[in-house]
Amino acid sequence: MPRRVLEGTVVSDKMDKTITVLVERRYMHPVYKKYLKRTDKYAAHDENNVAKEGEKVRIIECAPISKRKSWVLIKDGAEQGPALKVPTAAAPAKKAPAKAAAPKKEKAAAAPKAEKKPAAKKAKA
Image (cartoon, rainbow, N blue to C red; front, top):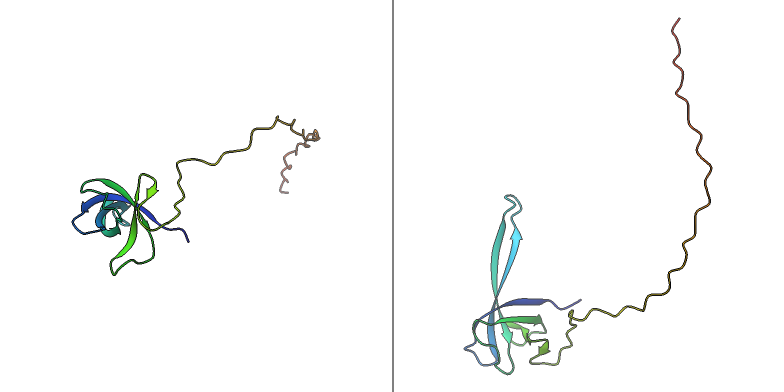
């Protein structure tokens, strides 16, 4: 199962090697069909204390580090903390070079369909 990656704002960096990240999400109300905002705060591991309050950061799910910490900070594509391999979506996969276009097979000319005549109405006697 892939690890979740969330994006949010650092609201506290006062703890050693830990930051608090505020993640905002929008969802549609099931009855009123209006979009609502919900926020959640996550404690994330910041090994080198590089994140500062007010910064936009990305965090990734990991094995529990403590009672409340099960997220690790990702900073500018490079991971801070435990060695986690994070796939980056920035570089799309390279495609094979395009081959010369092969001529398309033409469908055999179908015989024209016979037209149906409207059914004659029966006269009542």
